[in-house]
Image (cartoon, protein in one colour):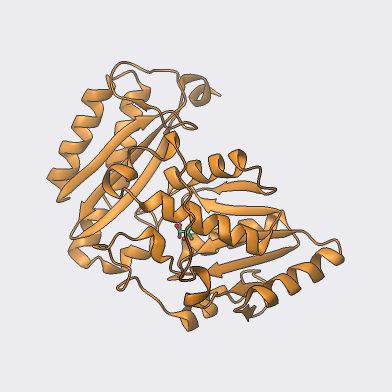
Amino acid sequence: MSTPEIVRTQHDLRGQVREWRGCDLSVAYVPTMGALHGGHLSLVKLAGQHAHKVVVSIFVNPAQFAPDEDFEAYPRDEAADMARLASTGCDLVYVPRPGSMYKAHHATRIKVGRVADGLETDHRPTFFEGVALVVTKLLNRVMPDYVIFGEKDYQQLAAIRRLVEDLDMPVKVIGAPIARDEHGLALSSRNVHLDEDGLVIARQLNGIMHTCAERIRMGHEVARATAQAKTGLLAAGFSGVDYIRVADPDTLEPVLHGHVQGQPLRLLVAARCKGVRLLDNCAVRGLADAQG
Ligand code: PAF
């Protein structure tokens, strides 16, 4: 395994993918915004287990950032990203030129309903429209057999599954388990903005979330267990909790109250730590899962 080749145009990307297809080689694709870390590399490795060839794209998508968000400050370092991709099994890196994605006359929007409502959308109202748009465009460009998304952005994964099914896109969506550091913090490109104190606080999120999930699994009342977790996060030093929500793992329909022992559910959290917004989630395993 060695350093992958870079292509910057649709023409070159399609030429390479066409050549592979001509040799009956399957393609798995990992869309990224760069600032690659161990979490991305685990997606690339998973991609390599599904297909003969792996394409990674690097594109910081302006359409998914609100005007007050960190589009300009989003970490960008192509050389470092390429170095990280060496020896991961990635065959081709697609880095579209910034102006080539959204032309001046671009007018199409894509809105995924229901599963993309609430949670992140309550805090970033246009985020999923931007993600759905760029993912649709990227899938049309790469035309892979498989596309890999991390479970860390669980609502994004659920929204992409819906998008792909609703629009009959000929690609199989694969969710990859969350990669964590040795203290349990979910790996994220934005973790680089955490200072030492911030890291100490952030690393408590995983434990508090799992305790909450375990309480719910054991039959504690949902509203009470999530309120306790929120109190725990604030006590740990988080400056705010945007949500801590139990939901159906596929539709993300919320479960706000009651005892849900035995149902397979997902617990999703967004909390703010020293100006960095952290997302995490875990399964609330049903009794049958837990025993089996
Ligand atoms: O998860 C991300 O990094 C981005 O939302 C994605 C899927 C690459 C679209 O820009």
